[in-house]
Length: 308
Image 1 (cartoon, helix red, strand yellow):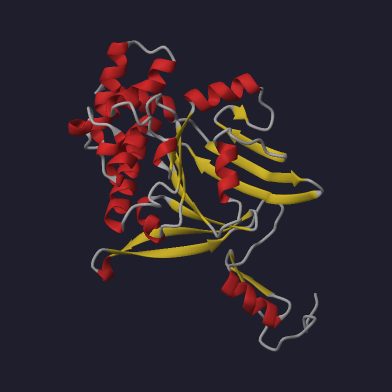
Image 2: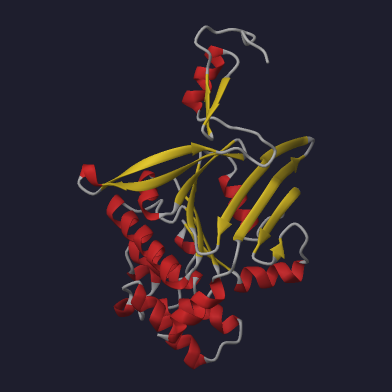
């Protein structure tokens, strides 16, 4: 299994693999400007697996398109590995999309060529980069084996179930051994059981190969399969959720949500907490033992009673 060690060694790097700082994306339509990302900050370590969730129009798909090299940011900084995607030539961007990032889209038509077999679909990206046939077959076979798809290698996409099509798409996304895998609603058309299986496989591949994974999803159970869940709202990261084991609940998990303070000191509260602050007026901050607590005042003052 030499491919495993080679892949992992290539993917593991020191420091964050993705580093977005004060990232803006503005779309201009006629005389209108639509701000999709508003100073977003996000850091993802090499080999980490995260899920990005948010309402429609929150900016999650825009973020994924920028990380994929399909769209260019308007301002700020976005580093992926050694590349600055704000300042990269068109030719370098083509090589980045070809070699350094893999895609898994919700729509099967964007993942698989319908008139090629599963094995040929997996080998196609390698053929485009000039890999020899023997190496293509060996790596394709290993990927399909790891995804439980060896017996489906000779089938065409229309002969596969929805879950099998997405597993084949994951293999295609990893064909050129990219250090980054992006998934846009990979389980949006699957039932809960198949969705769990897909996320379980993505997590296993991330850990085995050291691939950094960013998934955009609405699936509520995703927190069990990623290192953290990032909540995006109005073009900024509002909070992050981490799952931890709770042995008092028969091996179940507990989710802890943390509000994120960005590089500029801005804070976005979850909607239910924001409503409490709107009713309470100015916030009261308490700091004790390195722990900071922010809460609405109890008597709804417009100014704090004590000033220092």
